[in-house]
Image 1 (cartoon, rainbow, N blue to C red):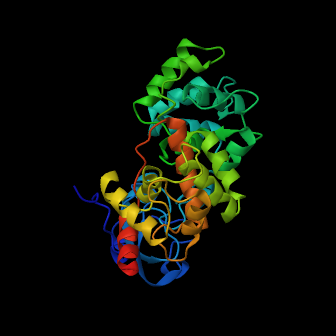
Image 2 (cartoon, rainbow, N blue to C red; image 1 turned 180 degrees about the vertical axis):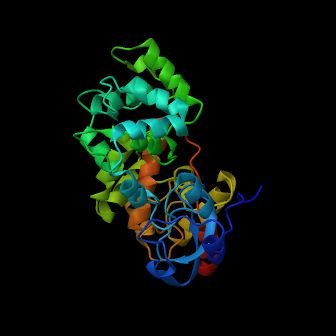
Length: 341
């Protein structure tokens, strides 16, 4: 057991060994610092990383693999690539794609029904259907997708833009190497309208890469902390009896990094209830639990940003029906517990 290889990464090592930055953070003076180093969680592998950066997204290993900035998570090569590609004809880009990846080149040509050297909204919608995304005509949002991927919505994407999307693990259109020929085969067998039956994926497992998740994230961004905490409590109160039991609170504890089993947590939960004069059998009411979530420095304190992240994770869990909710930042739980003691 123990953290993955990239888990413990001091910042000076990140600068020398495994560094990936965008143009906004590609020098030390562009990366804002905290007064002292702190333990942060990598968005990719969930490992704990020691850093003094004010903003942190990916550890060095995940950033390099995803071609993303360690600081903000944006494309590390977006500006450089767009400048390099600007004056290259589409035909030349298509030839470059064939040289770099024959398999992706074959897929691109299968999608490009107009033989224009660019993929339109309809071309990408066919690909999305095969990947299991919600791509019905009434829900398909090409403008939002092209904006997110920095494509021209009117002219579509060129060959090299498509290659970057396919290779980028954090991109909605990312394809594993073994998936590329599968998609090409579906397109060859079904040249006309692609239906959901042609999906090559288990959509329940891949729902976190769906555009619906992005819409959910955008919807949560407009909510106040009070609204977010109300939603958190609605989720915690599974049996809808107006109380939060030990079993229900355990899922929140796991998110906050509680390291023990449900049995160990139940004993801890009883102590919390007795200390706050809650009924340990029924658990605190949702209103009482809301006060606990708002208590500054409390073991269950949840910030506004954490509430948004938690609710997005909850949405994924509920949609996928996979209830093995991930723990994160166990260090945080341990340090808070020591401080409270």
